[in-house]
Image (cartoon, rainbow, N blue to C red; front, side):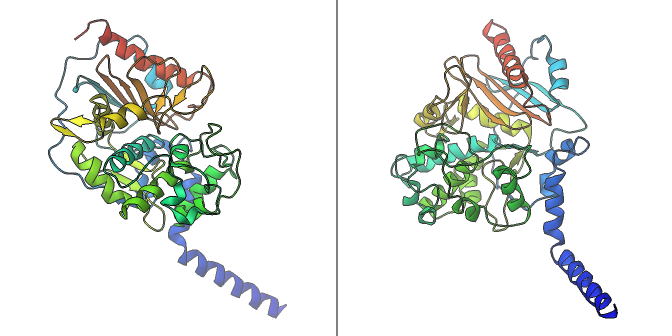
Length: 387
């Protein structure tokens, strides 16, 4: 018995030592497990850097001006919609002027809110710049040309275009409600400070042949980041800063959530204020141009915001990491993230809507449709001749 007690004490000391040694990782893991709890979600979404590793993205003057414009016309049901969808940040631009701005649920204008998959559209813009500059030869190149470490993985044989359009064929469970899903396992990799590259390289199963079927697979976006790094020899944070963020003229320093090797979580870890999300929308409304500077190639803006993937008839469509509503008019597209993050662009109306939300009902029947309907109501208010 005495020997057993000594063993038990020793075991408890070892467990305590391990817990102390890994206390930071354990804290991040606890943050992941509590990220979407009703009493924590709003606070968490505005302060991701308090729970995860992060890297700032340098900005530079001048800031893209957002002059005050005439107030947004009355929109039926707007306030009820904000409440129903747990909107935290709401910004509307008309022809580059700020016509509406609202912050809710205890948040403020300078809160840097998590983008979730809206971040994918930022990476797509960076890819278009790198492609235009010649670092990447062709989007039909295999991803392994730029990332040899993916040879032998499920991505071996997939082209860059396949991952840009979410048609890699990789088997990946994106169910956020399943604790053991691939997307949630990936979240734990991030929380524990492990390598996202290794996670991608470790995927070996395919759902189908590359390029034959559309399936929304977030890890595809990480592979795009790997391709950009492999082609340029530069890290994403510095490249994003130099090529997109500084020229765009953001107001507040954004940041990426990162893994333990300081690689950014490019598929969903970008954080910035809502006005700066709107500035990104304005850039794409202006075909990638700010003032006299063409930041994102106009041809890439056009191609990436048009349907490119083999999506189901009558369903929402997918470009190069941008979404296109199923019945979209010319120049209507959006960036979209879980729990209600959007950048909506309607070029004919000259309207950009950027919202951040903590919408735990974002996947309930009618939630997406209600968002699109509201964005279109805002655009229609201007299409009908309002100033």
